[in-house]
Image 1 (cartoon, rainbow, N blue to C red):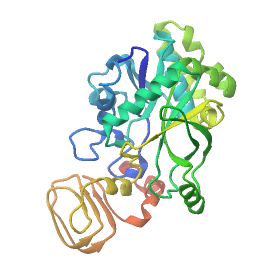
Image 2: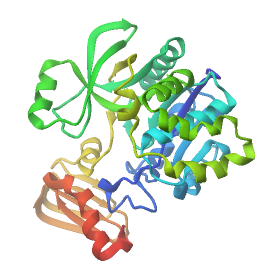
Image 3: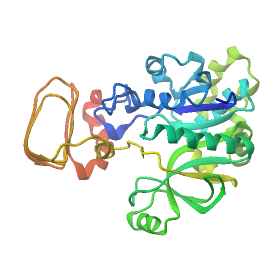
Image 4: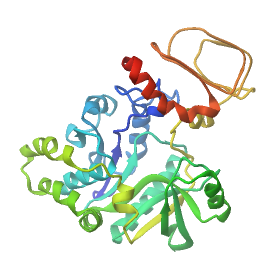
Length: 358
């Protein structure tokens, strides 16, 4: 383990595509989505404890979830939980985290990773992260992890990369592409020159702050008081300065504009678990293609259906197919599998009439 290697787990999202299991008061990173006895956040933490010193793992979340993080990650020192008073996207979040870590170790190299993704090949993933850490420490570079695309998916951003290795398994990034339409996604797949952008990146504090000064100077100036403030003033500064920061993603503000950006094509059994269908693809199914995530159920002539029942109720289904069925104590969702992308928008309708169920 390297003392200069840090991990920042980004855990502030609301997981609205996983409603009604994921709620504003308890988003999906705090849920045992796979029935393995560990929440997605806990599984993310577990992946890195063999790789970096536990005291070098930070969790960045919304202030409303600080207590939840403490409950799920009891080993994490309270000082390593960064609570944001507002949701201002990832560029302010990454900069705040970097500045706070810089106060204790300006030589740190930080890996920023999502809290709610699935990775099956944990050991191989750690090997790739080690290579990313080492390259970012030796070079003024940003290293991203790219996923070999298994299908033309319009829900991901793409990384266009040079297929000739720079060193080891590391390739130079040519450009980043926003979420494409289906025809463009198919072209990306056919070319073989594109990877899915998994939203994981590694860079030194030196490189990160240089790029913020260059590409987002106004944001940098807003938050640099954290570098010199006394320890007792930091909580007050977060409340005072952070809400005024602009709503910018780290990709748009920094990574897409930086010059020395590299990627490691990664086969790590990855899924962003962004939708019910992505969960459906990952879990075990019966002979009729059903993903059953409950104990009390009777199925007759049912196929290609996800059933998750978080209650003690008996579920009986007959002559249905291609459905998402999710039951919580206060909500029952039955929705066509091929229209699952609409579930996020359902929130607006629910908020208008039944806000207490969000």
